[in-house]
Image (cartoon, rainbow, N blue to C red; front, top):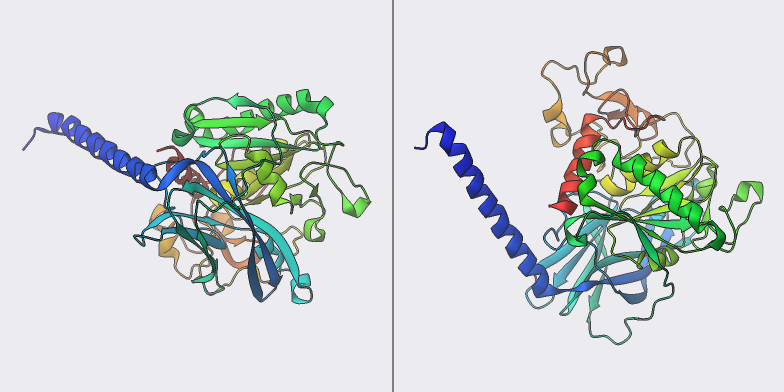
Length: 432
């Protein structure tokens, strides 16, 4: 048996060798199944509050792959939807990812009970070398998964489009290293004219600082690439339908999504991906050239926020918390359009919300012994982590980890320990 003083370094060397072997094996798996470029699948997602229909639009080859080449199957069970990529010859799952969409949110609105709508959506994956089966699943109200749509993809299909709609120059905001070893974020401009590209670059520098100086992202600044794409719009700003303001912009964003004044989104996912594809990326951040307070974040789709409102630092990192780490909203006293957004008889998939139905699967292991569950608000100074009632747009029966957090109130650089843990786990997935 080693003396303690020599055992620790020896064990560390063994672990480093094991991690290196795992990394090499995983990278070889990537080289076996994928090219270093992207396959994008565009489809229409239509239906009502109680129905979903998927229909293929087109498949597109994009020139870069910005994702990991070692972590290909996502370990997080997050999102309202997920897709898996299966090698047809071996039956092995070679890639997977969870995500959410505006359509899933719309299904919980009153309009969805009366109107049938269609939303353009898309997913991206490393470009396969051999035929694959891409399967799309939806999370049902009871938390289980139901396969909705599958697509056989032959990578040699000559109908996979190769021409690019938008080609723009780009610049580095933070240059950390190889895309496959870093988290790659692309800042996409919305409502910046050609004459305002200088302002866009300055805004990107300022906004990048908000992220890179915010805990826990500050610990990973040397592992985060941030790009900016110089994609000009014909006019400045974004649409504000409730005030009859309409702008000719490249991504067609608008406030008043679901008739909520501050909710800023875009339905035009084809243009979003076309612009983002000018660089290798993992996550898309859309910067709207506006002073108006607002934004939106959709898990593994995009974070959208305005450049110049007084709370730009908070709004950016809050929306990125949604789009990057799958964090849920912890507030419960603001206007929303959703009805019965959460099923109180199951656990929400978001890592920072619980119904206490199965608290063991949430952050119970982070709660100090003796902490009352639920945790009374009056005890907030005594228990940094507990289960405080109110969250997910509901005042009762949904609980959040801490009294306050960047996912709850207008406070920048204030992620609670549970949200911090979820962010760090996601950062590690992209960078290790």
